[in-house]
Each structure stands twice: as structure tokens, then as C-alpha cells.
Length: 250
Image (cartoon, rainbow, N blue to C red; front, side):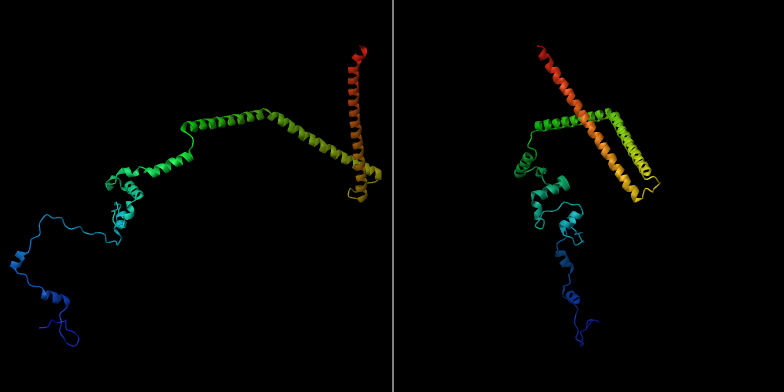
């Protein structure tokens, strides 16, 4: 009898793969089952792979904070630098000797060469330089404070000088204004009638008056200078005569 549902197209019967395997498997008898070896009780069950993420083993272990296993895929972790990093991350449970953290001969030589170039001075020399720099800074601060104290002492003097300069400037401006007003009055008296200060004739005469005033001031300054020179000459003459008088008496 042909099972329903396993008929080829065209009406030719066939068995599916599963049915064929079941049919070809011999039926075990009770005697056969007695001949099979029994499973030993107490043996550990085979490990179950829980990594269903699709990550590689060393990626998976790193993600879960487990130390990596050095194999062909992670052969680069056999280097000294990698061993130091693994020990720093996972500690003694890695089984790596802590001695890997100590510099090897080449590293030690490089370190000593760097120290000799970066810090050529001995400890005593470094202490002496530090003390010298400290003393220099303290002296600079003291000089700065002394200069500030000296300036504070002269502060009142400088205030008086500034005030005197200000008053002198005010006096000069007042004198210039009075001089200008006097020249304007002289121009008005010269013309004999009132005239606007913007009138060209007024400006022309005012300029002449200013030139005359400057000329008189210049002449007065020249005479004053001549008088000072003459007084100095007289003083020198008197001093020379006083020096010659004792010699004539002898």
C-alpha cells in the first residue's frame, strides 16, 4: 500500500528521505540493547557553546571582561607589550608573571639615555639651581616693592608739580586771551568805528598787530639775553681782576 501524499507526478510512488531512513534502519531488539555499552554515570557533560552572538572568541571574551586566550588568531598577544597590558587589565588570574612590567635591557638603556639628555644635572646641582632661582625671584620682588615705596614717597611731590603745570597752562591761556582781546580793542580804536570781527579789513589789521606784538616780544627777549650775557661777562671780568690783584701787590 502506497502512503498518501508521497506520489510522484505521473503516478509513480516514492518514499521521502525520512521515511526511507526509518525503513532501512534495523529494528533493535532487547538483546541488541543489552549488548550496547551503558553511559557511565558521573562524567561531566560536554561544554555548551553559549556564544550565539556571532562574534569571534577573543571579541566575545573582551566584551564580557574575560582574559583573552592566546592562540593562532591572537598570536599578536604574545608580545611583551600585549602581555603587560593583559596583566594590567586582569591581574594575577592571567597566570602571567608580574616581572613583565619591569623594563628589559633595551628599554632601560633608552630610559637612561633620555634621562641623561633631558636632565643632565645631578640632584645636588638641581637643588642649587632651584635655590638660586628662588633667591633671584625674592630679590626681584624686594626691588619692586622698594621702587613702589619710593614712588609713593614722591607721590605728593608729583601731585604738586602736576598742579603747578596745570595752573601755569591756565595762566598762559588767560594771558593769550587777554592779549587777543587787547589787540581787538586796538584794531577798533585804529579804525575808529565798530566793525565785525569777520570783516576782511579787521582780520588784516589784526594780523599786522599780532606780527608787531611778536616782533616786540622777540626784541625784548633778545635784549634780555644780551643783558644776561653782559652781566655774565662782567662777572667773569671781576673774577679775573680779583685773581690778578694779589699778584700785583707782591
